[in-house]
Image: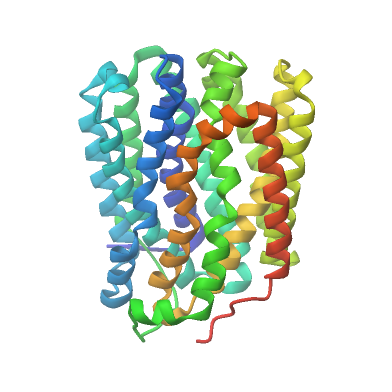
Amino acid sequence: MARTLDPLPLLGGLYAVQGLVFGFTGSLLIPKLAAAGVSLEAQTGVLALASLPWVFKLPIALALDRLRPGAARTAGVAMLGLAAVLLGLASLREGLVTFAGLGAAWLGINILLAAQDVCADTLAIDAVPPDRRGRANGVMWAGHHIGATLLSAAAVGAVLTRAGMGPALMVLAGLVAAGGIWAARSSVRGAVARESAGLREVLASPSTWLLGGFASVFLIADVGTGALAGEFLMQRLQWPIERLTTTFPWVVLAGQAIGYGGAALLVDRIGHARSAAVGSVALGLVWIGFALLEDLWPSVAFNYAFIVVQLIATALLYVGLYAWLMSRVNPAFRATHYAVLMSLLNVPRVWAPTLAPDALAALGWPGVFMAAGAMQIALGGLAWLLRSTGRPSAA
């Protein structure tokens, strides 16, 4: 029998599973490819291809709005399927690093992960009142980063360092399967609108294109710099991959704990859009400062301090942005409306990584951080101007 839970632990757990897979890709797989001499174009191509399903989540969202299945159980089924695919990849063992179909395999993994994400977001909209969505998104993002840093980079990374890619994927599959079983056996209470609507109503909503258009450019700089992170750490800074599985995850976890813990407490109080705007401007200033201090880049301590400050600003940006968009959806078709907004928000994840190598070649490392900072400051100002836009018409 399903247990009725407070929504926040379940939401945090669902996002932790997402973080597991993202952490494995960004902190372990991509740096391993970089260390093996795989081209930057191939690295960013894998990231772009894996991001494609996050732009096309509408079929799952439409089904959730029309059929109203159990979102937690649907998420659990998706995670169990994901675990099975990871076990299949584990059989490739070390050949995975040069496997020609790696991008296609990661595409399939992210289709299942995107389905789980739609279910998690729908649960949040159904079960969390608007004045607590800042806290909910803080918990969700904290769970995401606990999965990415503590569980994936540290725990799975330790297995990767000691035993290789195959055993690491098996451990990853086991953790994902455990999350799937928990979600499939759980339920949350939430006020779900009985009215149903389709894609036509979503596309006719004023907030879809006004806020969605803004969202479609808001993460370009963050996605672009993130796509270059593995190359920056492994080639520009010449860090050993062992550092990414020892001290580095704990520094990242500290920054995330401070950032997302603080954001969970503050965003509902200071306002969702205001938080996104302040976080965006702060992140831009941090990047510009980092670009101006290139002489300090060889210092591990300096980089660790930069990472912590960057993560605090990023947390305020992400929690504020997601809570803001979540509170602007029409509850009559909440899953579809939010999926459209998230699809637009994730558009840069598909194409921005493919432009990152050219940007680096043209601007160099300091220029990339300087340009990203200027863009993020400008977008933060735009978020401030749009902060009262797009309120839902349905109660």
